[in-house]
Image (cartoon, rainbow, N blue to C red):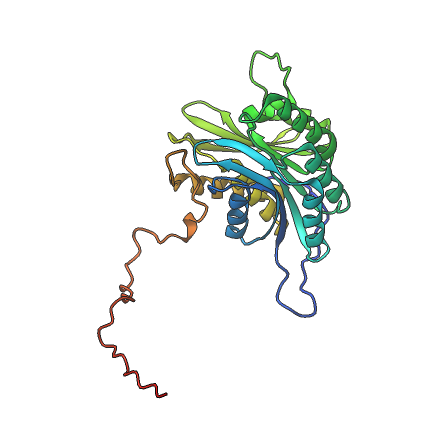
Length: 314
């Protein structure tokens, strides 16, 4: 996916201060805690670190869930969300912002006020599947996101069906909306780019397409996995944010983020009785064809060690 795309924002200052080590690639992340590690901040932190970034997680709330389903969500107070973010932004040289699940319209408002004060930072937003939530809460959240945050978003990431239900709920075409159709809908709120995932293609493949209202800028095709995954969207959007923060252009960042996600899914694992999770640390595992290292000594083996006599005197 090599395309010539203008930079999302002016390049931030990446020089070290006072002759110290090179500045870290800091990514501010708004998302909910996920206690089973499927998505949320657990996914963000691991994905950002895997591509060389430094995650700065802002907790917006917490899911109550297992690896099979979300039971409920508890949102943090919007002032607490804003205070976390401003404390970090006033201290560190953040280079990009990722917005995951904010949890409430009030939190979205707080996040939008924070990001508006830092217009030089690219904002990568991910809209998760909210079908586990009440319909009225979904509508309120979508409306607030559209009105308050979308005008500041540089790249919107989401599954094809999720974005379709949100951005084009009255679609009456004979065919499903294309990535360009969704990009055109997002552009009504000034979003320049949309990364649409999970578009059904032929021969058991899924397309992932980066688009603007004018054109398709890149496309990567994945072979459909038989397993049911959870956490892929957070993984992709966090990786994309970190790569953009590191200075890669959008085309290169998208291509590398999708390649990383493909590796995560190919090495997925099931930690419980529910869905499969992406293995975001697959790159750290030794290759099967690598020679085995010498076995490490057993720390419980005390042979060869003598315990000195207890000669304490009173």
